[in-house]
Length: 298
Image 1: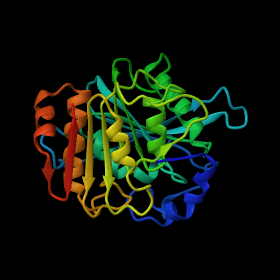
Image 2 (image 1 turned 90 degrees about the vertical axis):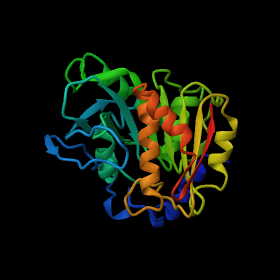
Image 3 (image 1 turned 180 degrees about the vertical axis):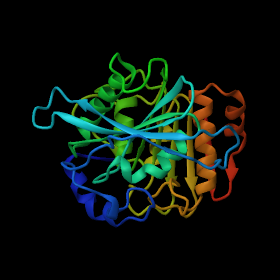
Image 4 (image 1 turned 45 degrees about the vertical axis):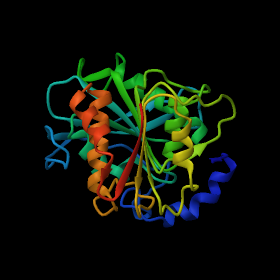
């Protein structure tokens, strides 16, 4: 159920050609030229499918130093945040293979409108083994003394790692592998997430609750990956299967099961980042929404 770093290259053709409204090939740019925006804009967001407050959002960007890699010393990060008074929980989003955070901007803006600071690093090194350390550097920057956000705006006690496709390997590594686990992460979400091998460390499927989203018609992800990860959990975990779903993971409005995926995602984030008991009840009681089936481990 895992892929090695060497075998990742074999996925390139499939990933580039795969269906999915986020991270499309036409939106991809070279790692060396991908940069986060340096200006700030405001975007109005319509209410989402899930009940609850929505915020106007502000888009910006910043850079993070990578002191252990002189060849690739900096990393650009896209930031989308609610317009309002914090603190807001933090979500770090890992993009898919040969993609950039900006390719997912509509989805990330929607999530930010629910009341979360969403940051998406553009990983300068395509080797996913380096990404967990990069995610930790981003968390350091956002929650530290030199944060690009105002003091008190980001809730550093509630942090989710979220990823799509190969970005799922980043999430699993930084959240559940002893090689590179960052214990500040309190929740994890993967959309069609790859389970990758790491040179050191072992996986321990406990701690941060997880939402695992898979499509049963995904032409890219190794069949059974999501079920394999879910079955290993000894703590809270949710496996959301999209009937007829492809590699998009329900992130884009044209994806099969989009409305159900977004409602489940919002319930999960509200339950585990905001401590919303009503959202937790909704998450656990709505086992079957249109086009999706939810398995629950408590």
